[in-house]
Length: 313
Image 1: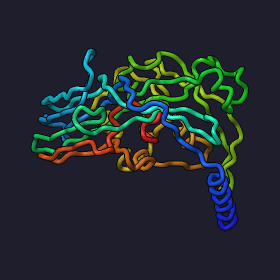
Image 2: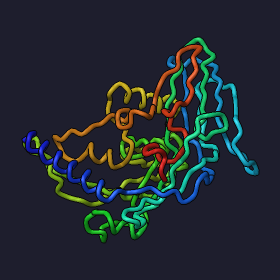
Image 3: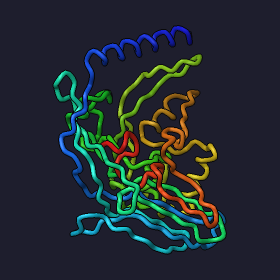
Image 4: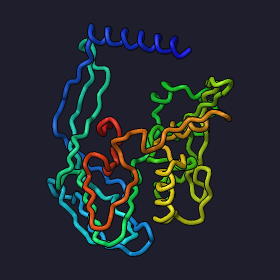
């Protein structure tokens, strides 16, 4: 079975490469160095033993009326949260063309990790104890347009309670059906029930068969958030504990609702790709030893544009 699958895969790759060589896809830059104000994601910081630790943080922010970002430097005592502030990014508008026809358009962020750059972040541990940090995505929730909804398989669309509330993109990561962001800041949740594209499957003798496409309803209206009922916001310590467990292989955080669905396709079927392993370039959780400094070198997801694919939006 593996040999057959391998032959099919090789054939597909060969045909795809041959086709692309005959008719190459091209990227045309329509406009360079455009700018837009977005927001930082949140970074939670605490000492590993919960003792107060002095930390110096430095990152870029944008102030209305300025042409460029400024560098903000502060001394803080753990536990604390930074982020959620405006920052100006620079991006290019690009068209993807095939045989001269424009097939799609997108914006590609120009990442900048230098001071005043949107991705700049420095965390210096001034204490005598190890500190830990976790990144919480602050992306806006986005819903499918009517046109976009028509292009995906969600079964009978008449069964969707509200077609204007079908989630296309949400803050990451997801924990028990709810973005961590809304557990930390319940007031940022949509305060509504939303539908998520969902698949069901049957797992038998090592084979998985997708049997149903539909939407699944999740409450994002506190106190009901996903599978949880909360009486108060999660603390910094609670959120860091989830990330620490994840880094140790607990398998409970997912980059998207799609990944969360894959882990719940069918009884007996196990899908899991650790959050940290899905994109090895991104570090969601880490520790900084006493006296050491962390500087963002393409691995801290600090701007709330999509983390993968170079920040395409």
